[in-house]
Length: 476
Image (tube, rainbow, N blue to C red; front, side, top):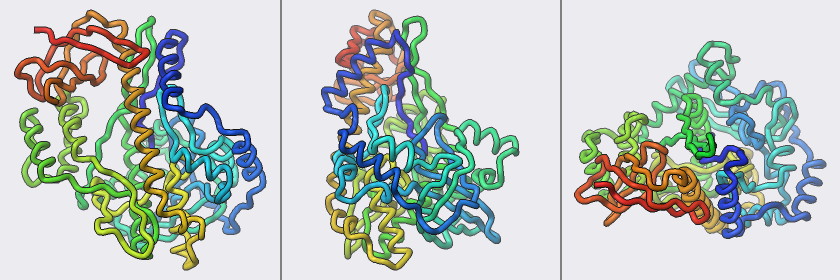
């Protein structure tokens, strides 16, 4: 699955923003590198670890990721299976590269997940693991947890198994390359089926009542000394590919619930008040949510190019709150659902970038093999929710602070200018607006009487890149 993040393109004239982002990293205490002893252990294990005995190197797996990615968690092979389909989804065997209780393990538990910032990421694992021995790079033999999922003609799961095996990816596809090959008919069979299977899984999502907020990729570039924000809408192939990850995560959750051991990614359903407020917002914006239509289906109907749709999506964020992790060992939780997915769900497809996936993979492998869950995984299950919760809060802090500084940079040359905007939300005496140019969201004092969806004009009073603060005043 792609990570939709704001990134800053390198440029000498971007120095003030780069300096601000670097200072922000120091303020949060984000590490610049791994301790030498962690690097040394990672390199030693990567050089010596044994590969699984099962051999699937004859299967032409492939990867689909953003162009230039080096931490490749997933590889896929799709085929027909009678009147249905067979999805083989290989996930990097990170547990084989991390010694339980070792230095890499301890450092990964401190970090929790890879953190993404506009000026670069803070990885979960040293590059010897994350970008080399653990990465499913093309043309090399790697260990993987291979999920073997059989689907019926409508895309529903018939059976699932997961076991370790050696694989060799044949090619690393970028999203653009994969989309072009599928569209023009040149994709190999194991990739070409992604359109058909992806569409069926989207239909299954509709049946379940699942929902998603899709936002575009963003990049800040510098043109003639001025910061500009570019946005790229996601390609269909990205959604089809994401459906395979969701399929695998739901299969993992079902295995865990049946065995009464594991860790689930949960989210409570929106409250009745949240639904009422959201429906009222859609009506106020002139994009009313029809009675009887599931909210996920309604969100899929929105035209992302419509400025008022941006306000609807902003209002919809109130429906996607409260996500967390729940460990189970002997009893299932009272509510195992991930409400946005509309099914129980577990994280197992990104072990290079997310700590909890390492546990999910070894637990599901043991369940399928009928063997005991590794002692290190079972004994530490209860600690995972708090580790991942702290890491998620830090990731949110990194995102928010970076966005503040990027927005200040984008507006730094516009101080004194008057800008047009659409009101996304009203919050007491302020409004959240989306500016037309630059295309960013910001807070401003509320002009008298404005409501979500209204058009307003604002004057930029200040934009401080160093602190990420921006100030506006309404233009009457």
